[in-house]
Image (cartoon, rainbow, N blue to C red):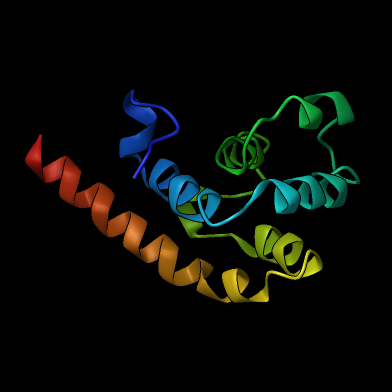
Length: 110
């Protein structure tokens, strides 16, 4: 599994989550997500500069649209639903839980 960033971020739950969700989205879906998100507080230029879904999820997190501490992925779920990825929307809570477990396991190894 490829990681967005080989540095510290990929060991955090949000980094693991971004990798898992982002890898399940293709370029066409990324484009659709950008169109849906464009109506939000993230500017068009910033969205257009995002090369992949993993970085898009990080951007949503940086803009407090995904909240790491309380597993708040409802907005991402809404966006996924709007582009027809209901299957992935339904998996978000499970993917988040997996990401938390993996991150906690990595913390124990260090």
